[in-house]
Length: 264
Image 1 (tube, rainbow, N blue to C red):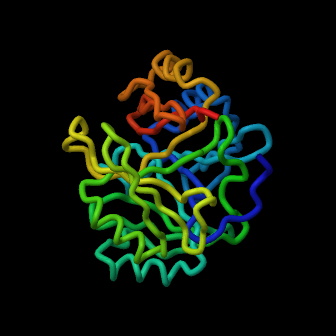
Image 2 (image 1 turned 90 degrees about the vertical axis):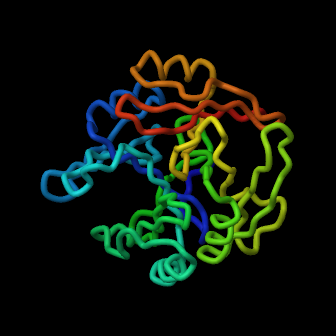
């Protein structure tokens, strides 16, 4: 896949891990995905580590500060928007909450953190010098973003109103109904922006959340490596017919993510 140079409005463009131990997380993900890191100063007592596959940046991680005490380690998904202030206002008007921002991130971009009416948190990004990941959909990079929600109807309406997304419900048989998000103006052949599903019974009590999927060459081998590196496999590898094979895991600090191997 060619290097990314821009993202259209309503497209997931970046993933960022806030953790309690950045050095331990770097070792875990480096061992799992082969990531290398460029450490960058990002304010008093803060280092922002850019994760790389080859020469491409795929995401970042950092140790959470005292101002984030009580927040569990987590992967935050970023969505590029054309009008940050406008999108933040729409989020608030559509039943969501503007958790932080909009604010400048030095000279690299401008962002806001929002939560939808069901509590799932996501970031909005208006790029300047930093467009986001320069590689997606390849081994070691972000390949999908999926919302697990306690209220599909409320969440779907929120993202339609806030980002202009369209929704398409797909019957997945025993797995239930899966909702695809599409950007405004995209036709049926265009890649979906992301997906959404109702919180399954075996995840009762888990708050609504956006889950980041990362591409791997072998889902089963990578799941075994998660355990060997000190992480935990929450959902063992399973097939999505004609689409691929995935598993859900947590790193040693507790941040959840998914690994995915495309079928074709």
